[in-house]
Length: 429
Image (cartoon, rainbow, N blue to C red; front, side, top):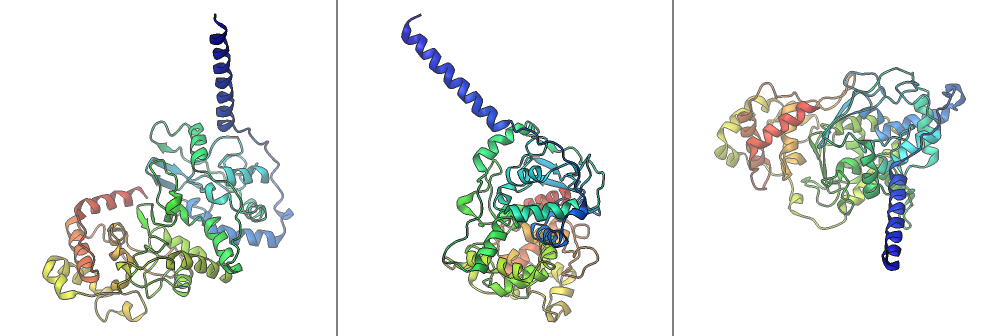
């Protein structure tokens, strides 16, 4: 064999070995040894209480609780474009929960998406955001979870399209989309602004829903907070492109996050409902800090026609959509018509509802189909679901009428298909 060919083969072999080692290093993550479950009494009460607050801000209970299930035992289906994932049990049960997890194992899962046994977790757990959370806050969260009642509850098997059930593939996802690093306070901004940024970008993981995702499910970081989709609902933009007729302010955001409703905008619906429910009990200073940061994201930049102000073109809409006007009067007028009680009670006028201004009718249709429901044993915004009372054609008529009456924007097109898609998305939840 010529010397040059032999040398080339050796170099190629060396490169292959190195590449194989790199690939193995990316995919293989060693397990962390099981730990004896900590004595709940070993955790200081203030630490547990802080962990409870952080769990509320992170909405942990929302994803890790099945419908009418016990908090934190998992089992909730999470519909994704790639199939259905099921939330896992995060109570201290040793067999099915995190009871045998040390803090090191918990921290690795939260920051790197790697389970205690070394397997890769799906990014439905938004670890790309939790990587910004401090060790102290993760310890508080760990203390809170480890002092919950241990409940045995295995998670159902995920139902993903082939080959995404093969978890080592997630190593590639992490390589592309996981951006590790602690939160760095921004110089020149106030302590309140930086606190809000830390909560929104970290444990609150607001960008997980409010940022568009690419075909691989990674957040489009260059379009952060430009709006996304969550559980069949649009998560509106939290940047200057937000379509709200009235610009959001710190106070209106604070009121909305704290109570689930703001008279100048709309009521929290769909996945946002549980968020506002949790924030209703979070520290006032933290909720206001979140409002300060989000308001700063939304007000920088140019105004567009979404800021034109509320409109009500009743006569024009009636002429264009007489069937929709009649259906609206019968099904909706009792609450949304002129002089209706809810209007005088400070509920948002439909002329201010963002869902009617958006390019995509998804949220308007979901609100009609699914309604708005406060969480059990709580008071809050309520609207009945019409999915069983109205057929697709009737919902199309009402949606077209609402768009024509309360918006100057172009009519929605292909509403029939949009209603069918919204029904399908609602059925998956």
